[in-house]
Amino acid sequence: MKRTVLAMLCLAVSAASLFGAFWYWNNVYAEIEVPMAPIPSPTVSSITVPVNDDEKLPPVDMPENPRGKLDHLVIYHGGKAIVSMDFGPATYDSLGWGSECGKVAYRDRDDFPKPGFASKNRSLVSGHVWCDRETYTLNDLDKVRKGDRVEVYYSSGDVAVGQAEADAAALPKDELNAEHKGQVNPRLRNSKKLRTMRVSTCDTDSPVRANGHLSANVYVLYTFKEIRFAEQ
Image (cartoon, rainbow, N blue to C red; front, side):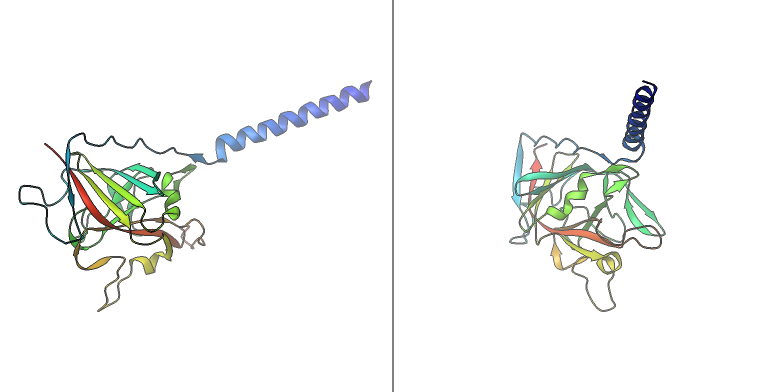
């Protein structure tokens, strides 16, 4: 009888220990997948202007570029939204530039344009895959394939709509951003004035460098096809 009681007691202690370990892992270490931010509702009344194909500016009575502040980024794969995140301010430090946790940002220095703006420089947009335990939808950037759509929303209601030039690819961080003397890095610059954008984030399959950061980035190059100007 005593052995039975002792065995049951040991079993109960073991079960409690396992439950405690599971609870601790789930609440202290397990990843938290942050769901997609709501996709903005399209402007009810807007005028769509094709861009880039014929390299002409919008009609004289229309703005040249999207208006207002950057608001939201939506990335699609096969017609399904896989990334939906708000824009935040870019952050700069000794390691380069990036975004706040949970948001994307565009590089607003060195003449790099806002997404949808015409320039010989590509618009550069980036964000974190994760921060601490949080994992963001930008983690799915590697799913993008040639022809997939992107939408960049502005506070004015204007929307810049683009198309992936190629499948998502991975490249060492230094090579992605380096530009050798006398050469033009096509991941940073255009050969002529166009409306283009590069979206990048960390490649979670790449080795970790000595400074604790992943060694490569996943990136997608987009060309904007139209701007939907909200009627003011």
